[in-house]
Length: 214
Image (cartoon, rainbow, N blue to C red; front, side, top):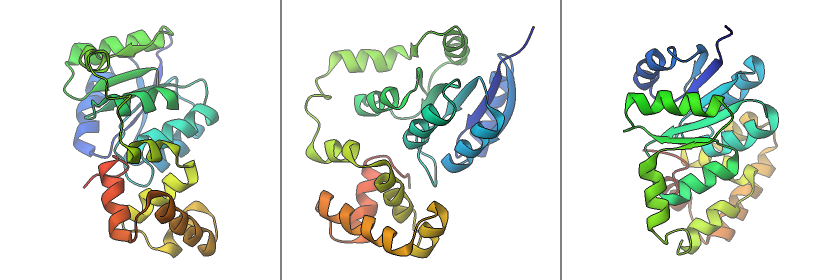
């Protein structure tokens, strides 16, 4: 029997090590990575059947990584495993292409069930998240800043995250393979669109939106 090939992404090596033992009961773990950019690269190289990823990761957060993976490796199924339980994150993850969503407090048996369910071609969402989405009106009452974050272009979100992580303009330009002037343009546009006036304010905003974690 051919075991499903699984790629795992989380920015905490101890979490990866602990999860790996559980996941290996359901399939072959072909790789583990600790940032979103490495995840995109490894996913294209390995073409796994399933990708288990966190939202808060350096260099490229899990939501933006998922958006890219949906296009680059469309046959790989995505399960988000995160600490975020608010409806906004869940909705954005599903829009990005995730077919499974679990919180890290989930029981071991639930992680296994989610993997089995997704590999059968079905969707899985942890019950606690489903209850919160059904029991609140938060999706309709999002603040303007949350709506703005979702409306940012993918490149803008990438630049915003890297700025918030303390990367300089030259470093960002090199990492994204764009010119320094283009990075500066995106930084200016971000400040204008979000009505923010300094790198410190951009950083605070990125943290509040879950693009980066402290």
